[in-house]
Length: 440
Image (cartoon, rainbow, N blue to C red; front, side):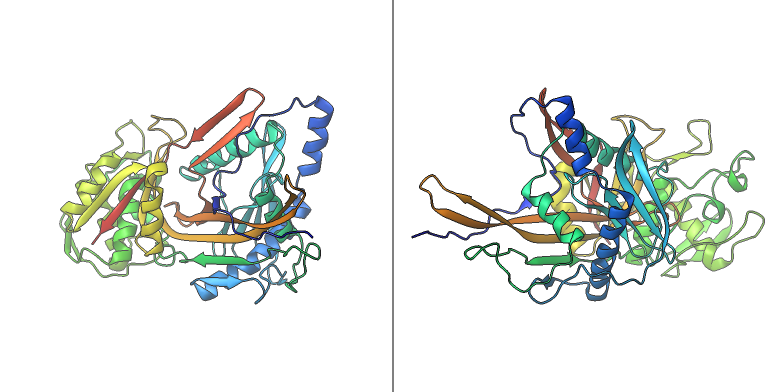
């Protein structure tokens, strides 16, 4: 008589998208056929995106722990989104991911290969814009490295990724069907989301009206240096906490903070912002002063802020805790805890270890995850058929890039990943650092 064993495996992070193992020798023909087999077309990506939009919309409505399984199916196409454009990001003539922007705002970034987690980023209220913008480029570079190495080394899909693609590519009717007479479907899914808690009140940038109090420079937008990404990020966090309450003063102009400040400033260079808008600009300028930001320090219009000055600046501006910096790999649990409890964090990143030209500082303002079960079945060494439900977890961090709301949304938490090939295994760590523990 056959024995059945059903248990849950330890939750495995989808951040580590590939696992190390010895690779067999693969011929060029086999390699090409596998690439074709795992490729995801724009049409297929649109199907995945349409099903995800409905699921993430439910997250926005609930904004709490939600169990989905036998109770209901989140992957139904609502038909309420109209596609504005589908863009494909390529590296060395290989499709890496597809970006679907919707007409009424919102975007989904879908992996172009089935060996990768399907949903790489998403938003219900912003559009995915210029990949070259600071901060966004850092994320694109990290995810591009991950996907490209996986595609190049021709990994077989893990059971976790295979199940995720099945969830998104097939409408699942949770009728508790079984794989066979003895194994469960393992169709249960769970989700959690804090929502974006800074984006609704601050989609700020660095120039135009925001730079009203920055130093003059005729060669810059509106004739002024930028506010700097560091002061912009600091000010957005202060607007969220509505702290500090103070009488601000700069160059003879006096303004009392009036939170919440405007979500965006819509002014032209020759139009004087009103008092409510000017307070945003002045708060940024004061943040720059406390953080000892360098305006035009590299002989251009940009403003540089040393990240290590920011936590001290928070403390000097009346915060009980200015926070602690650390590598995202080591800080990840602190990041997740802060965001889950609705405390914004700051990130800083660059495309290289030390590169001030593309360095950026931005706000993390949300956390979401998607947990699911996937079936594992096999015959053991005694000939008994065993059925297991493995557990998978995909995690996302909401990024407010400080680029006027462009591309704000939830992004796959890809701070580190392992990859393997015929030459062996290696680990890629991003150059991301995080400031956690900021408390008013």
